[in-house]
Amino acid sequence: MLDPKLLRADLDSVVEQLRIKKYDFDTGLFSQLEKQRKSLQINTQQLQSERNSKSKAIGKTKAQGDDIQSLLDEVADLGDKLKQAEGDLDELLVKIEDLLLGMPNVPDASVPAGNTEDDNIEVLVWGEKPDFDFEIKDHVDLGVNLKMLDFERAAKLSGSRFVSMTGPLVTLQRALIQFMIDQHRLQHGYTEAYAPYLVNEATLTGTGQLPKFKQDLFRIASENHDLYLIPTAEVPLTNFVAGNIVEANDLPLKYVAHTPCFRSEAGSYGRDTRGMIRQHQFEKVELVQIVKPEDSMQALEELTAHAEAILQLLELPYRKVILCGGDLGFAAAKTYDLEVWLPGQDAYREISSCSNMLDFQARRMKARWRNPQTGKPELVHTLNGSGLAAGRTLIAIMENFQQADGSIRIPEVLVNLMGGLTEIRL
RNA sequence: GGAGAGCUGGCUGAGUGGUCGAAAGCGGCGGUCUUGAAAACCGUUGAGGGGCAACCCUCCGGGGGUUCGAAUCCCUCGCUCUCCGCCA
Image (tube, rainbow, N blue to C red):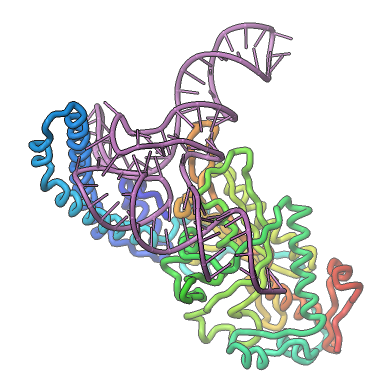
C-alpha cells in the first residue's frame, strides 16, 4: 500500500509514476472520496467529542447528587446522529481502503523505463551455454525416456499442470533443495524457517496477493476453514513480522525456507503447456529479508547475489535482467530476474525473481521497527527472491547436463547429497 | 470431540459502568553520582488518525449489542492455556 499522506500531498506525481506500471488511477474519484471523508470525519469526531463531554458532565452531576434529566434531554438525539455518521464514515473509509489496496507499488527511480519484458535490460550474462555434438532432448523426453517423469499419471490423479516423478530424479530435486538451503544458511547468513502452507486472507493481503489476485490462488474453504494455499513462501515468511515492532538490533531478519507453491495459473492457459515449466504445484527455496529502510537497496543486490551463487555453483548458465517499470510486479519497486539457460527451449527462462518492496508490504501488514534515532516505530522494508525455484532448477540440470545416451550427469556439488551417484541413467 | 480458564501498552500484569489511554513492575530514553561502568536515586516513556491551528477523535483479541456513558455488562467469532478423549 502506498502512503495515503503522500497521495493527498502529491497525487499527480504518484499517478504519473503509476502510469509506468500501466495503472490508470481515477484521480477524480479519489479526490471526491477524500473530500467526503474529510467532512464526514470532522463531523463524526465533533459528535463523538460532544457525546464524550456530555456524558462526563452527566457522571459528575450524578456524583454530586443533582438531577440529570435536563442533561439527558440534551443528548436524546445525539446517539442516532452519531450512529448514522459513524456508519457513513466507516462505509467511506472501507471504500478508500479498497481503492488503496488495489494500487500497485511505485517503481524505484533506478528502474529503467519500458512496457513489456522486451524492455527489460540485461545486466549480466554468466557461464557458457553447453555445446552439444548430438541431437538434444528437452526435459520431458529425457525424463519420460528415463521412466522417471510421468505427466499422464499426474493428470489421472489431479488434472493438467501436475507432474509425478519417481527414482533418482526425485532424489535430485531433494538434493537441490538441501544444497540451496545449506548454502544460504551456512554461507549467506539466513535462518532456516518453516511455515504454514495454508494461510488466511489477512496474510495474503499483507503481501499483496489479495484482494486483487484472488484468481491466481487455490482456496481451501470448508465449514470451519477458509484458507488459501501459498503461491510462494514469500507470503508466510514476510508475514512473520506482521503487526510487530522489531528491535533495531534484530534487523536484518533473513529467512530461507523450502515450501511447495501452489498457483492456479488462471490466465495462462495456452502458455508452457508442455513439461514442468509451469505447474500448479512446484517446490521452491525462498529468501526473505526484513531490513531497515536505509539498507534495502543494498540488500536487494546481496539477496540477488545469493541466488546467483546457487546457479554458479551448479554451473548453470544464466543471465540477469533488471525489470523495466511496465514488467514489475504489483508489490515490487525494483526487481532482478535471473533466467537460466534451457537448451531444450533454446531460451533463457526465469528461475528466480528478486524484489525490493520497500515499505509497500510493511504498510499493509503493519510491520515496523523501532528507530533509535527517533524512538518511534517506523515501517520496515521487505525483500524476497527465489533461491531458487527447485522444479525449474531440476529442468535446467536435466537439459544442460544431458549426455548423448539420454543420461544426466549430476553436478559436482550434488554428488555427495546423491549418495555418490554421478549420473542418472535408465 | 467434551469440560474449564484466559486474551489489557515493547514485555509482565492490576483494573470498582462515570476525568481510565488505563496502576505497578520490567525494558527504553534523559539526568544525578562515578576516572569509566554497574548499582542506587530522580525524571521521562503506548499506537494510529483528523485538523492551518487551538485542539480533537479512535484503539484494552475481532465483530455486534445494552447505556447519556463500556477495558468493565450481554451476544458472537477467533486465538491461547489446563484437564479428558482420539490421533501422525
